[in-house]
Amino acid sequence: MQGYQLTFFTRQDRRHGREPLGEWLLKFAKSHGAAGGTLVGGAEGFDHAGLFHSAHFFELADQPMAVTVSVDEAACQGLLAALAQEDIDLSYVKVPIEYGRIGKGVK
Picture 1 (cartoon, rainbow, N blue to C red):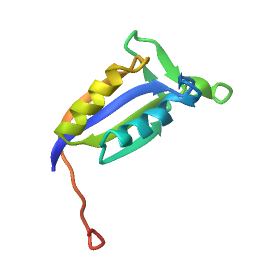
Picture 2: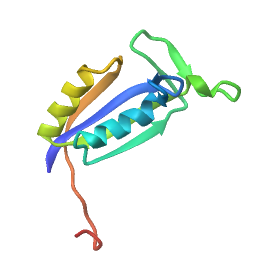
Picture 3: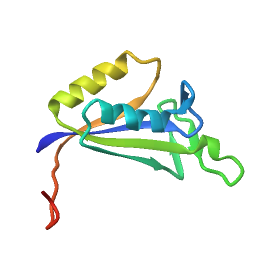
């Protein structure tokens, strides 16, 4: 299938309502048609303002997080439109991809 890989960048300490933003975003993407997604914690990173964030032994709250999802064209448009209506501020990358499933167990 043809579609997009969307990767959203945040930090572990950010929240949307009562839920960590990364976890909320993964669920939100699934509910808006994402074919698959992953939440990954990073060791270090820097944000749009050039500020560095890292997972220190004593301070894990500043740990960079990335949520990556695979979406088709319609789901991509719907997800980005829905996110634009939310009270959040996220950086993201959108990359054209081919995705699918492979192996003997695929049905």
